[in-house]
Length: 154
Image 1 (cartoon, helix red, strand yellow):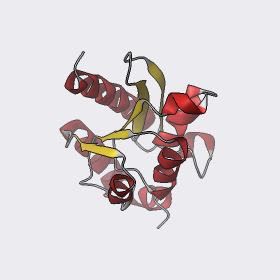
Image 2 (cartoon, rainbow, N blue to C red):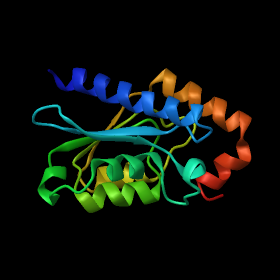
Image 3 (cartoon, one colour):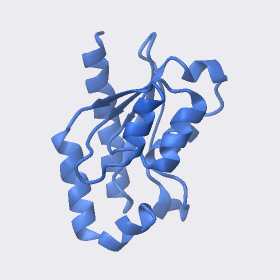
Image 4 (cartoon, rainbow, N blue to C red):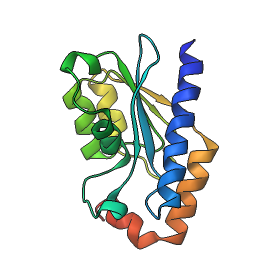
């Protein structure tokens, strides 16, 4: 499978997770972590802040948590897929584990300075500009602006 096909698969999974989060009454941000060597999905998840009453279970963090414990070297050959530009907390987790590639569904509804910081730290950042991701996020922000501001710490 080519990188473009893996990126489509990864974003499809991330979006499915975002839609699941929205259906559960949460913030529609999803993700997955895929091994670059064999395309194996190591974990997937979505923002669970409202569902679990957690201040930190963003989509990317939930994804990493659902991977379970992995040897540090495993992360060094993976791609993290996320439906929305990663916030500072999620950017830190990406850097901490040495994830070399991040594919972002959209940065229209929220563009974190984390994108530029990741690139400055030699992480390959790919922007998909995915309409599904933009639409579901905008719908959530329009319906629940206070919950969105809480999610991003504003």
